[in-house]
Image 1 (cartoon, rainbow, N blue to C red):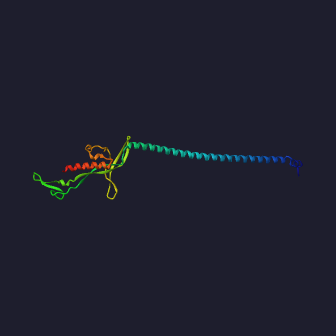
Image 2: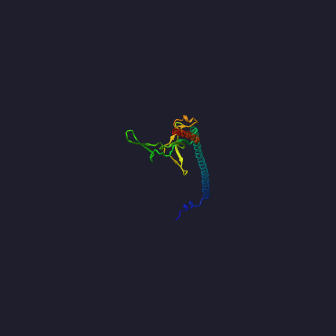
Image 3: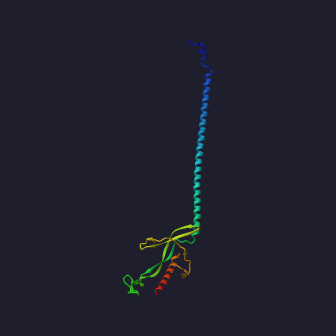
Length: 225
């Protein structure tokens, strides 16, 4: 059984089409707004990505500049140190020469035994022996090379240590088992007579050292005349 009044109430209204049209228009407008907002956000995001890339590029460039600056500062410091070291080193040379004493063996005389010992009897009748003069060779001198083995700057003073080196018959360089020493006295053209102890005299020139060695050898030869 129907209710006629209810049937009339639910009949289509002439406004239903307008409402639907309005709803569709609202939906379209909302959709357009959403799309527009999405596009805006995409654009902003793209711009932010560009800014981020630009920032990263600027950051990398800044870090590179920092590295270059530190490198430049390091180079400047090294150059200052090098110039200071050169100033402290003065006329430093890596190789010096000293007179080295050697002995020539004399011919054996007929006064001594095979060990070059002379035997005699003391005034008290005791048997004695002593080295024969021919056992003692004649001293001569030759230059020996000393190379800088280490150095340091101490209290604004450049100090170098030298050690004896030689070249053997095979052309191999070997180091004498000796301690390093500083060159306290370096020859500066003085008369050889004024040089007190040859052990401490260093020469920058091998030729000067050779002349000094010849002079020392001549003095030794005079002793045995």
